[in-house]
Length: 306
Image 1 (tube, rainbow, N blue to C red):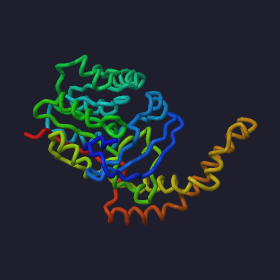
Image 2 (cartoon, rainbow, N blue to C red; image 1 turned 90 degrees about the vertical axis):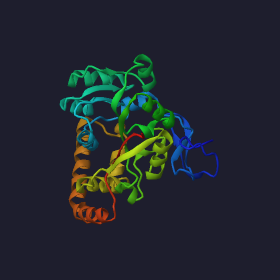
Image 3 (tube, rainbow, N blue to C red; image 1 turned 90 degrees about the horizontal axis):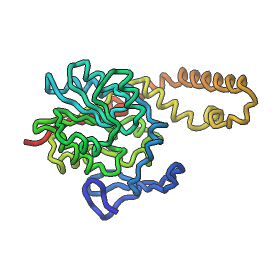
Image 4 (tube, helix red, strand yellow; image 1 turned 180 degrees about the vertical axis):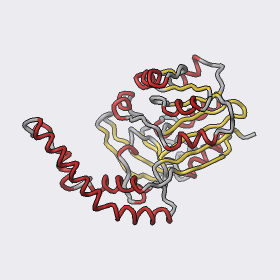
């Protein structure tokens, strides 16, 4: 076993073990003492059907932030893992030439139909490079993708190959300073096989240095009272009556009317909790802001070193 970032083979710190029914594998999470990357063993990602079932596409905080920071009036941009094309839609509206790839063929189809973007392909990065060997880009973007990959270092090497000499990269990751972790609660999506790696500032700096990139900008998603409120509700409802109601088997409900009443009751209980917890959320919002705790995502912008 070796670290997928720095190649270290010694003194790994075992964090936890996860038994995954979907892949029928036991994943062990380790921390590398050299670069501080947390990684899974085995580094085996979920099948494409997992993402088709669970991935949700929407306009993220970092999309507009990236476009505001693009140092080109006209640029050729590719979004790797573009999903249904929300970022590319915004980039196209700003006059950029846009490309997108994603192995989710249905998402590519929706993006073409919804936003009329032409250069969209149901390919992996390697397949795109094979089919379009001469394409080079001013800006390569990949949002919440790196943590899913079995070989993040090789992926980044390929990114560098499709960049122009003065090219930039922009990517986002789960924020290691997000408020959920402050409450010692890790979201269900931050475990393998969904996420195979967990990154922090030290491991990101190591990644950029290995590949010859210069960090230009590092930003954290702003903390929002609503996000804290919803997060606290999620944590608080992981136990108790709401959790029991949500886990109740549908087969135990005789008809649709009972199911409707159950759903109505769950929503009412959550609204009551939302009302009760709002002052607590406001207090935590102020406290967490002072402590330097942020929202869910971290955005990195870098360029090739001269």
